[in-house]
Length: 262
Ligand SMILES: NC(=O)c1ccc[n+]([C@@H]2O[C@H](COP(=O)([O-])OP(=O)(O)OC[C@H]3O[C@@H](n4cnc5c(N)ncnc54)[C@H](OP(=O)(O)O)[C@@H]3O)[C@@H](O)[C@H]2O)c1
Image (cartoon, rainbow, N blue to C red; front, side, top):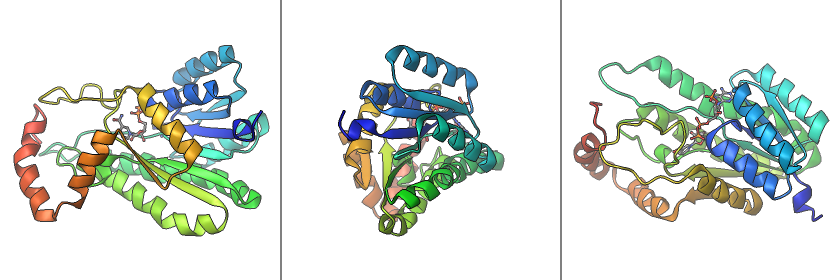
């Protein structure tokens, strides 16, 4: 077995969606897995699939917004599958921001899970990685964090915060042997996007396609991974657009996006 295949990977948000598809794809490639999610039923289903695949794995329920619970989970995974070479922080929540009710509580939840939750997961594995002088942290941001998306202002803000948080951590961790990859998926067909009242059908990746890109990012360790290519191109253009031009576009295109008022 090659060194690469001997690696142990921890994933949060592994019970559903992109995290689950990535766990299954990694299992097929021979990695040892430690899986965390708050959804016990989702985790149980993934564990059953992994049992039959012969993958060395352990699962543990934890809420990433609770640091003690994440630490207890990683300690248990450590004892069962060994310390992680890679952490994929995939647990996240989404949602629309609609006027006139801004639902500030939804913003708080998104910041709590999508930013603080990722910090908790990193915090739980980081001392070990620094002691071993090696490790790879993979944070799942989003192209929605490139700019403020008019119908998902809170989600955009949470992903922008995550992106800059990881960017800020990067140099100090690099000096200690730990690499950070920030991942920016386009739309993926999961529970998070299901039911979004888009006015027109939106092309979305299947979770398995997103997982294939993620596996590549885990193995190649780029600074940033943006996918699919068309989204990377279009959103890259939008990201660099002057503020006033972006506002002009969103004034027109924004209300065309959804069937509901925002
Ligand atoms: N889908 C997309 O289009 C898309 C695009 C770009 C980026 N992303 C990002 O990709 C990641 C995965 O999204 P997804 O589409 O796969 O979503 P998903 O299908 O809703 O899966 C997210 C998983 O994370 C779990 N989770 C949520 N909050 C948690 C918490 N506090 N503690 C532990 N686990 C928690 C969820 O559990 P519950 O089922 O209990 O909520 C669920 O199992 C997220 O970070 C998301 O922001 C998604």
